[in-house]
Image (tube, rainbow, N blue to C red):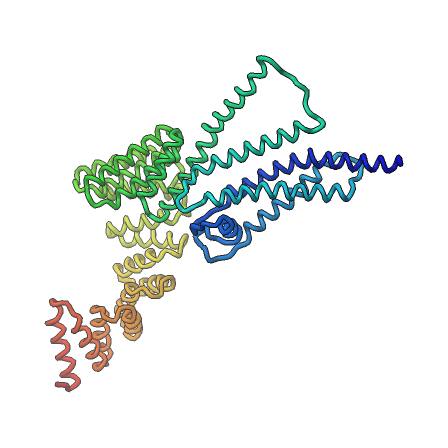
Length: 512
């Protein structure tokens, strides 16, 4: 009898432990599962069924724009989190105990956890998924998460209060009034320092989706709402200013375009005021005034804005003196102002900072190209291509520079490298054919032009060149065929000379 009473006491204490320790931890783990649901449940397909939203979030890449691609990564993440939490939560209650637990206790504990944590997380997931409709204001969803968190906190507090280790009353009277005050202050602090930032970030991410799709009007609306929610955060002002700048680029009406640019200036200036040490805020003002200057219909106003752009770039380099890209963009504005010497200084400063930054060498090459300094341009392009050999334009411009120097073999090699990257580029094929022709390699010139012609069968100049090349190697019949095709698409100013050439070929072939 004594043994049975001890066994009953162990079972009773086990059930009591299940009701207090495991249930409290289970409720907290349920909140963790709910947090996973709030973070990772998305509805890019616009589903109306909550279960379909949850299933899509767990088993597809719809959130990344790949709705048809299956991926179980998120499902395994949720399952692994649930299982590990299950084991950790239950084992935590007996970590410091030496007495063995009955099988019944383990089964009840695991069952309580699975039902409690899974139920809380699953219920929240269904409620959250139901709210993720196509027209839902996602920024409001953070409220439901905090309400859920408060509800779980009340449950946990109630469970602990009903347990055997209930705390004694430690305060009363006027001191007890401090608790409601603390609760109110906590709510206000969470609202101002946490909820507002989460709402703003949610609005920012909604705007970013339109930003990535170049839908600037919609992006501006969401960025503006993010600014309204968190007006002291420069980050959202920065993106609002950028969206306004891009919208201004698309505007065709000059006065309205200036309005967009000025609004962008106001936003970026405010971002800079809020965080003057953030280089991006000053840097983007330089970019904005460059874009505004390039699009200004008044040349004088355009020059003034470009000069203002250089001032902001100079200030940006003071904040980030080791950033090579800022110097490159500064040099670009100097080129737009016609100050090639100053542009060269900025590019050289960039090169001194980072010898592995290929863009700098290509910009140097473009600068020397504009000055018709072919040898310097060749050196710059070759150095840049040694760093980044995938830049197609680098190879084509390098080929052009070699051709201007009369170095046809090197020009051919550069054109061939460009064709390795873009095999069906008609312009490169025509340039390659011209280089072969300069070396008297007529058959290779014909082959390159033939490849170009397949890309555009009605290209007049390719047809004309094929006619001339075939005539060069005494294939008059082929030359006549291409000349007649060229004549059918020839511009008016070319027809008279081409007709004379056709007659000459016909005479050579003895045709009427």
